[in-house]
Image (cartoon, rainbow, N blue to C red; front, side, top):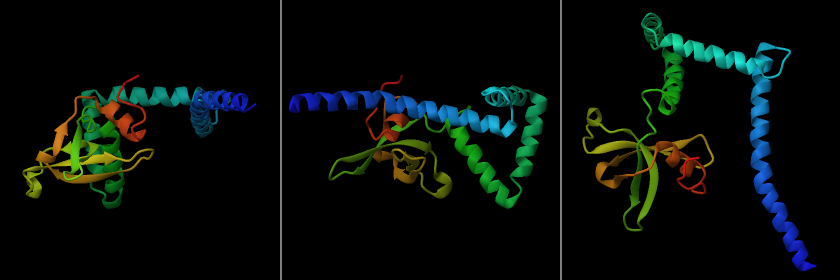
Length: 187
């Protein structure tokens, strides 16, 4: 009887390990589609997502042309002159740019020695290599994302305390965000 209960529990948890992430992902995708469809109030599910995806892609294509690029630069300059709006706009733009585009920032994973005595290390991402403007010529800026959160810490550390890692930025980010559970394999 005891053996049978253990097998049932093991099967239950094996099934849960497969089904819960699948259902959570499916629910998130369904919820995102519903939210986008609700914004446009369209009768067909998923059509709002396709329209918004297409519009953003078209806008991305247009912003890569010279004429639109000049307009975007002018608009960007104008927005950056408005005090409170500048703070929000530039922060969001820099955050998105850190993950996508030509100016990605989370592409240099490093191992930082936090405590030499206890050989405590932490994985982070170099975000600024040159801090001479701050009078810190032998230091770099490193961002340490938190596990299971959209937050992190930002430290200025001596260059001698960092070691470059031979892994991709996305693999390092996945490892950190998962709390080290995911490993370094990219899927």
